Amino acid sequence: MNPKKPSRRLFLKNGAALAGLAVGASAAAKSTSADAPAERIDQLHLHGERSHYVESVRHGSINNPERHLPDEPRAFGLTSPLQDSAGMVTPASLHFVISHGYEPPDIDPKEHRLLIHGMVDRPVTLTLDDIKRLPSVSKFHFIECHGNSTTGGLGGPQRVSPDATAQDTHGYTSCSQWTGVMLSLILEQAGLQKKGTWIIAEGADDYKHSKSIPIGKAMDDALVAYAQNGEPVRPEQGFPLRLVVPGFQGINNVKWLHRINVVDEPYMGMMEVTRYPRLMPDGKSRWFEFELGPKSVITRPSGGHYLPAPGFYEITGLAWSGGGTIRRVEISTNGGKTWQDAKMQDPIMRKAHTRFTLPWNWDGREAMLMSRCTDDNGVVQPSLAEVAKIWGIDADFFQKTTLITSDMNAIQPWKVNADGSVKNAIFQNS
Amino acid sequence: MQFSKTLSLVGGIALMATAAAAQQAAMPAYKGIGTLATPQQIQSEDISISREGKGLPPGNGSAKEGAGIFAEKCAVCHGGNGEGAKIGPALVTDKNAHESLTTMKPVRSLAAYWPYATMVWDYIHRAMPRNQGGTLAPNEVYALTAFILYKNGIIQEGDVLDQKTLPNVHMPNRDGFIPARLEDIPDERKRGCKQGICP
Image 1 (cartoon, rainbow over the protein chains, first blue to last red):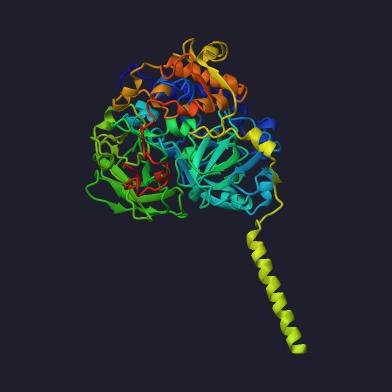
Image 2 (image 1 turned 135 degrees about the vertical axis):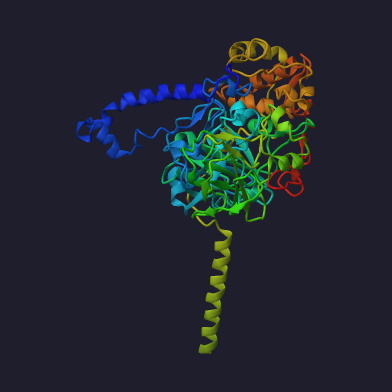
């Protein structure tokens, strides 16, 4: 490793400093509960906190020049610690964030309005209370940044480093139960006109992020969410309203939603047209890509984990597809020579993370762990070589480019060494 | 007689029920929730600008006017000549930047990459200056757009941008996007996508 490059070690150092602060603040809680200050007890009673022994945190590009896009001056995003995940729901506090360096707006929900206008018969403004009067739905859906697991750009050198964790390689995906109102109901209520073929969804953030979404999707399974995992959507996730567009690239899930304009063509929002298209070696960009392909990653054992001795271990991970429900997950422990079916844990739902497991006896020798999923359309997660083939490029493109190779759903290999260490092997077994 | 009267009454009720069902189907399911938005309200909140300039307000500006506004409101983040600084990205890039798009180190700058000049107007208007989006008057936005395009060699210093001329400015990367036909965008089969990814 290049010693000049800031590494995970550096992050851990910074993280430890932060953790030190946190420990200082809650030092009293380490003693017996009888000694704990009354306000700490009150806090735990009023709004629970996790044990201070749990250290799993999001991390990102704050003050780390190696992780910046050339024109991103501040924290680009925060990744979710997948290597510590359990089940299929991500705690809201650990849900990944992409912010392009902007802080979440501070919105008073009493003042917030959602305006529906454009090609509708009855343009309408809805308060949060109005929206809560409408029939609600609660649905589990993943949200994934289309740049998640890209080998270039966003992930930076850390994503392809042998020391990468599952958080470094795949941390820009998370899954929540979202509660809200189907967008189709709101658009029908407003009298959607036939000539309306696209919606432009806009947020109330500092740059008024706007995203073009085909009407077919808007009327299918998109929802206007006010709650996430049983509590109001958190500020960095779009409080008080977030558009959830299941299975579509993360950028469509507009946070701080305040306006939906029904129109008859895609509009050219800055982010969707200048940052998110996939630029290919031919110089042409693929714009307005939507659905995320089937993808899976083993979260344990994964990069940075350590197997203390040969013997029994459960292999576990997450699989998801923007196309529908995960039907099958296969695991290889020998770099793809043979595959076995993993067991999938309930609940298994459309466009949601699905937890899978496989019992494994490690014989103490080198092993290459890989997972591959198939969705209910029969679409199979590709290898890196297959991705290159479909894209019509040389496989070594991924090792050369500084581009965000978005919509990258290649199989992720983890190498287990004889000493029990687990390493990222993205370019060693493709 | 009684019989036929009853029959006609039943028929009448059935007719009414059919009419009511038809009316219900035509009516919104949850009528009355929310407040009808007035045209004034929509006008004040609708900042969407289409690629062909739908939504652009009256007004105009040129690079000459834009230079002063840029120095006052933009240079602190983007540098005096739009060359970029710690806070703001470069707005003015090398004349050959567009050619870098076929290399391993592409420059996706405004001049090299953005396909429509209307997007420049839209983004300045909605988002700039940072954390003060929406505070610039239309004339200022036209002038700043002209200044940035002029500095990139895309228009002349004296060119006046307005509702009509701005959408006609040709950006170098105008044809750099696939699919070219906007109506083909939502169709993944037309795009040749396989295994969840598109070529």
